[in-house]
Length: 141
Image 1 (cartoon, one colour):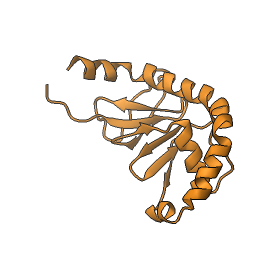
Image 2 (cartoon, helix red, strand yellow):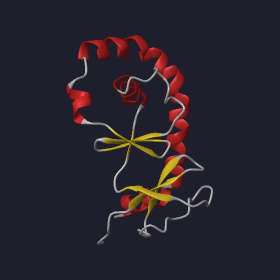
Image 3 (spheres, one colour):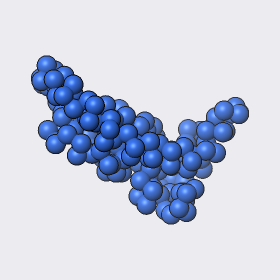
């Protein structure tokens, strides 16, 4: 079966990415959960797990856990936090103090999972539910 890659839209109401199987070219698709309008966000998006989210906060010099209740996704060098794009220059990674980052990651590791995991799990469950038909079509190919 020849298939064009689905574009990924953002549902602001649900706070999750939604695959647009029809590639509605800017028109957006309706969110399968809330039936609300979605907007194009990317052609490829991946979830940011709590450990990476903490690293992102530290790299951006934010307070630890400042994005813990946010929906955070990644596409190449761009992060999406609650649907808003945040580009990160490669110089941020090159200039990072790895030893200091490692120390802070270790310091906040346990608390990070305790604080972040319930919200992260909820976002992922909503994402799976909203995109079930996409997953099933891939599985059936």
